[in-house]
Amino acid sequence: MTASLDDLALLLPPPPGTVAAPPWDRAEAEFGLQLPGDYRAFVERYGGGVMTTHHGGLELLEVFVPCPAPPPPSVQWPGS
Image 1 (tube, rainbow, N blue to C red):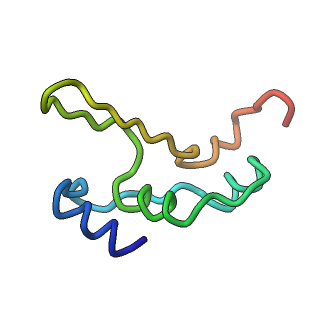
Image 2 (image 1 turned 90 degrees about the vertical axis):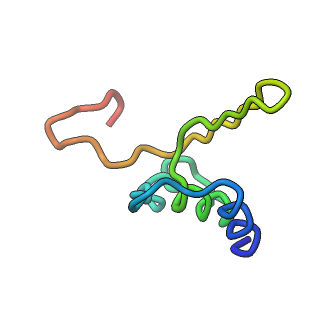
Image 3 (image 1 turned 180 degrees about the horizontal axis):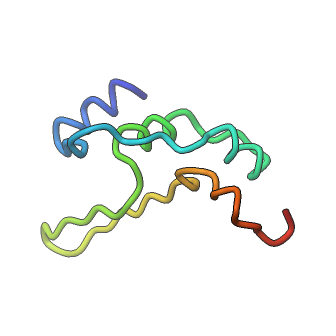
């Protein structure tokens, strides 16, 4: 996937600076599955969010990412 991701970066440069990686181990444990490596690589380079283009119409890509950080210890989530 890296070569394809590098090709994408030529057309759609990633955001400047460093993108914080989500807590993959925590997310995978909560979801009960292993997230695909290409998805993880994309998120680690671009982060989450919405990308749009208006070339002949609206095209939309929305990328959801796991929670960027655990909640503060003072937060008590239901069921935890």
